[in-house]
Amino acid sequence: MKTWDAIIVGAGPAGCAAAYDLAVHGREVLLLDKSDFPRQKACAGGLTVKTVKALRYSIEPVVRQRIAQIRVERDAGRAAILCRRSAFCFMTVRQEFDYFCVRQTIAAGAQFRRISAITTITQEASGVTLWVDGELLRTRFLVGTDGVHSRVRQLTGMGSGWFWRAFALEATVPLPDASSQDLVFDFAPVRGGYGWVFPKGNHLNIGLYSCAAGERIDRARLSAYIRSRSGDVDAEDMIGQYAGFGAAQHNYLSGRIFLAGDAGGFVDPLTGEGIYFAIVSGQAAAAAIERDLEDGIPAHAEFVRNTAAVRADLGISTSAARWFYRNLDLGYRLLSMTVVHRFALNAFANGPDLASLAARVKQLLPRAV
Picture (cartoon, rainbow, N blue to C red):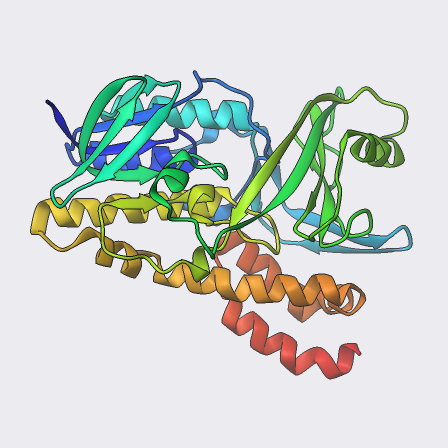
C-alpha cells in the first residue's frame, strides 16, 4: 500500500496552503475534497494585506477591486470613515479565488482527488489510515482542513469542549458598476455581529454575520436588509455558512493529525475574518510536518509552536469580541477615535498587534465614557 507523506482533507485556503508548501518541498501530498472546483462558497471574499503577503503566489488574476477605506456604521445617524493611503483589502469572489489556489497547488505537485465520504480514521505510531469511499489510504500525517463541519474533527474526537461556531448569510446584488460603493461594516442590523457591503466591480456582496447565541439570521432577514440598503433589487446566489472558532482554547496532544482553518477554529470572532488564519494555520501544519520528515522533530510540538502567536491573538480577539458586542455604543465611540481606528485598521490590514491595541483602548476608555 502506498504511504503518502501527507493527506490533506479539504481544498479550501487552509488545505491548499498546507498542500502547496509540502508539495514544493517534494513531498507526496494527496488533497481530498467533496467538491469539484470551481465551486460556490459562502464568504465575503475580502483579502487583507497580511493575507496577500502570506500567500506564496500572486493572486492578481482574481482581484476584482482594491479598497482603501471602510465605512463603519452604528445606526442610520452615525458613521465613521476609516481610511489609508494605500489599499488594505483586496476583493475576490471565493469561487474564483479557491479555484485559483487549487490550480496553483496542483501545479506545485500535489495530487487532487474528489471524494464522497470518509468513514473511519485510525491513528497509529507510524502513521494514519483512512477509509475513503471504500478504499484504505495510508499517510504519515493527516491535516483536517475540511471546514466547520469537519469530518476529520468528528471522527477523531478532537472538537470536544473548545470548538464553537457562528453563522453568516450573504447574497450577490448585480450592479453595472459597484466600484464607487463603500466597503461597509454596519453594526445596527444584528446582535453580536454586523451587516456588510463589499463592492466587487460589477456587483455587491451583502451579508449578515453574528456570533451571538440565539440570533437568527435567515433569508427573509437578509432580503429585508438588502432592500434597506439597495432598494428593490434582485439578490442572487443567497448562501449561508458557519464559521469555526476556538483555536486559542484548543490544547493539542501528541499525534499525527492536525486541524487548520475553520476545522481547527482559526477564525477571528470579532471581525469574522477566516482566510488569513486559514492560510497561516495550514502553512504551520505543513512546516511542522516538513520538520518532522526532515529532522525528526515531533510535528505536534512544532505545530503548537508554529501557531502559538496566532492562537494568542485569536484569544485576545475573542475577549475583545465579547466586550465590543456587549458594549457596542462605547466600542463604536472608541473606534471613531482617530488614534484607535488607525491601530485597528493597521491590525486588520497588516496583522494583529492586538496587545498594543488593547493597552491603548484601556488608556482611552475614560475619555470615551
